Image (cartoon, rainbow, N blue to C red):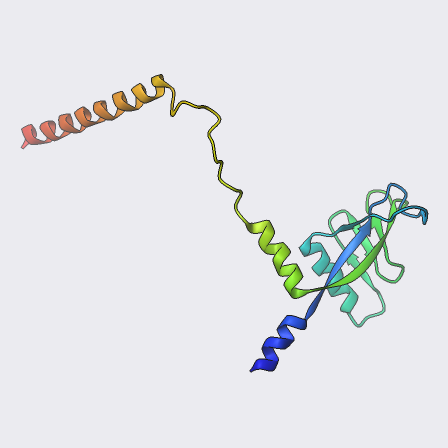
Length: 146
């Protein structure tokens, strides 16, 4: 049983990136890489693991040529960018997923020092008292028809 738990910790998953420099083909300067969304990365990985010779993946706006490691725009085939694959630990990717799903922190202070505008408080009080009268009228009407 322990060996299964240890294997789970050591497993890695593939994350795909596209080169996001303004000039994707330039080798000068720092390279900037942007992650594909989880679903896109999974589609690319599935194509990467296929046993056939055609290593292509189709995304909404791009075709991915895994043989040449490039992303090709469907609207402009001349618009191409390098892509790369990196392995990340499952724990690392799970932490990122959890971080995305956290609720935003609650405000510690309201925007206004007052609890509520006086006209709003008065409106709520008036509405709730008129609802009680409406309920009484319905009961009286129902009682007189019997």
